[in-house]
Amino acid sequence: MTRVLLATTNRGKQAELRAAFDELGWEAVGLEAFPGLAVADEPADTLAANARAKALHYARLTGLAALADDSGLEVEALGGAPGVRSARYAGPAADDAANRERLLAALAGRTAPAERRARFVCALCLVQDGRPLVEVAGRCEGTIAPAARGNGGFGYDPLFVPGDPRAGGRTFGELPPALKQALSHRGAALAALRSALAARPGPGPRR
Image (tube, rainbow, N blue to C red; front, side, top):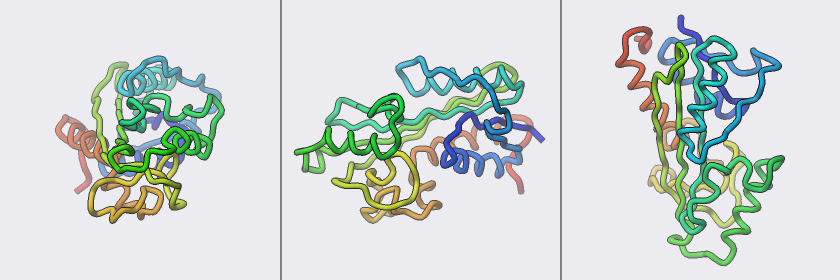
């Protein structure tokens, strides 16, 4: 069985990523299995380049295949911000609540739906044998709610209302996890990852 390191400390992301590898018959392990590893830098100005840098870093340190995710929220009225700085929007030590508060403050006075259009973007990079094996991306279009709603998910989920009618106007924070995964940027990226891996020689989906 192929082992893959999920190169994130975010438990919510780990759960979503692990499910995809379970379907493929790969054994997924988290960074907690390797305490003391040097934290990867995120030096680039694109999500794809940061995902690649993180995957290469952890694959080199552990000798395992490594999957890294870099995701961001892009708000049209803010010129694509917070973008690659989504996790640090309110400062290097900011938590999710602080980032959401800053985003709402930045959109104060913008009440028309067109002024609150946004998208979530997820870039995934899987490194194996020291080189990128698969690089994919997924996106989800939507709008930013005027206030946080729901206790599910993480990050900006309580503010993001996906445009898909199946969401029924609910935020990611209000959706059942399975529906959120089906609609989300990470769900789209993981579907592309599964397809790419299933098409390659080696372990494939469980039948």
